[in-house]
Image (cartoon, rainbow, N blue to C red; front, side):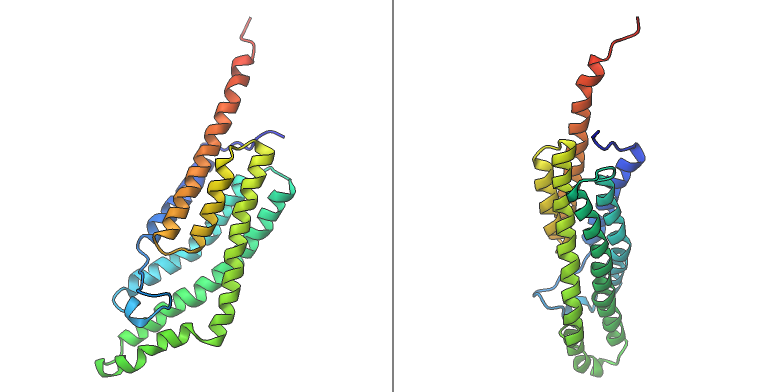
Length: 221
């Protein structure tokens, strides 16, 4: 089959989406440990909510970018990629909405309490994130993460086998999948940069492959 080719608008989408998401994630507040605590967010509620609301926008946009990468490819790997992208959008998006936005709203409510009540209410943030229901949703979040990793790997395999992509392309896409799903910096932004590198390398390889064909075409008599 012919290698997928991208218009300027499509290439702008493939690069613009991960670039914009990487910039957004640079503003993601980070804590001292793995668990989210009130102290990690209390002075950065606006940033926290903006980042996690933005995540709900970029999750489907990123899925669209990966989908565009394998557009026109009908191999098993490409089909696996498309199915995994649906699971990523549904489950990873639900996890972000519940935990990311829910935590921000809870911290904002605690910030509105009197100073004497804040100390007593602060542990509620950790209790919220350690709740049995939240941990159950965490399993769904993990399903979404694994789904995106599978989608990235499958996209790389499809491009390698069906579009003669350089070996570095599937490697970069696989690495990006792992890093993007661990989204706080430096992991998420690094993964998104690797995704952009994979796209540019693939596009460059396509251009190089088409050059000899153009040269071989006979000129006008």
